[in-house]
Amino acid sequence: MAKALEGIRVIDFTVWFQGPVSAQYLADFGAEVIKVENPKGGDQGRGVRSIKSLPVGDWNQYFLVINRNKKSIAIDLKKPEGQEILYRMVEKSDVFLSNLSPQLLEKMNLSYDKLVEHNPQLIYVTNTGYGRVGGVSRPSFDMTVQALTGAMARLGEPGQPPIYMGMGSGDAYGGIMSAFGVATAIYHRNKTGRGQCVDASLYGAQLFLAAPHLQQYLAGHTDAALQHSRKEVPNPLWNLYPGSDKWVYLCEENRDERFDLLCRALGADELACDARFQSSAARQENNVALIAALEALTSQRTAAALSAAFEGAGIVASPVNDYADVVRDEQAWRNNYFMKAYCEEVKREVDVRGLPVTLSKTPGEINALGPQLGQDTELLMMDLLGYEWEQIEQFKAVGAIP
Image (cartoon, rainbow, N blue to C red; front, side, top):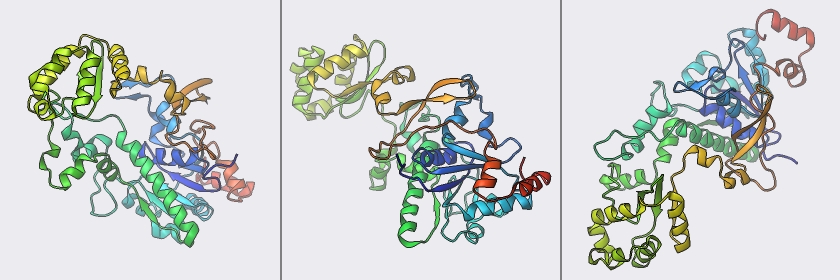
């Protein structure tokens, strides 16, 4: 079956996470993605064996999953001969993708202006920290950029430190936005014959993640950036409550009929009859007392018991799962949000993050996990770039390829 992006060739000159995961999304749906790496070590992600000092298992999940479905060519771009090889690749490719800084790419003779000399229809994509305009070039990390966006300031209880949303959330989302930019630029090029420069930044991605609360602030609601205690939220029916074993998130409008159903699910006739909670306005005015009363009831039951009671009453709620719960969720597996792939490193099938998008006619797939450093160098030199074996030996002799 043909893939959605079959026939698109991407030069993947990225490292670590945001850039590689952008190329991974393209590769999942059929693009030929060629990862260009330095022969001396390659992508720094190849060395990740722990995250925050915690081992990630007996195989390099960090690198192998976000570089799946890719080929690898090892080129020393400090050598003029290495640059010759890359320029020939540019001539035969649709996309050049990098998350190195524009300043560094300029020094390496890999700027947009330089590469379009070799391919005027090239789509040149950068994944920057803060955007291409404005002159900000300091290092960017998922957590430091998230701190800038205001999203972190909203999380956590008042008086307590802000909460980081999680490892790599902005990188992963920035990668999706970058892949979207690539697909959009390809569509435009196919109509007009013109390539262009595309940028998707970590800052831009995380600002988009901050919606809709950030939009409220833009519209003039200045309290939108403040932390709010769950014990004082205006609508007690839309709140986080403790079960006896884990938390449950309740998501209901503050309407009389919904409150009656909630009381029925909890077996709390006394709350339904309490004069303080007889109307939407009264429940909002006495929110602290109602939240405390609901918490006393929910904390006596397990999250599973609460979920069953809420579902039976037609109340919208969900337990707050941990990863151990999530990986057992059949819904995620049936939709290919989790998948299995063979890992050559450990000689067995492993569980991996799957596909966030479903296409019925041209579905994505995982053919192989990340490649060994430079494993496709000689084959690509011959079949794609048209070099003879004697020329390949000459490139080896000068150190342009291993």
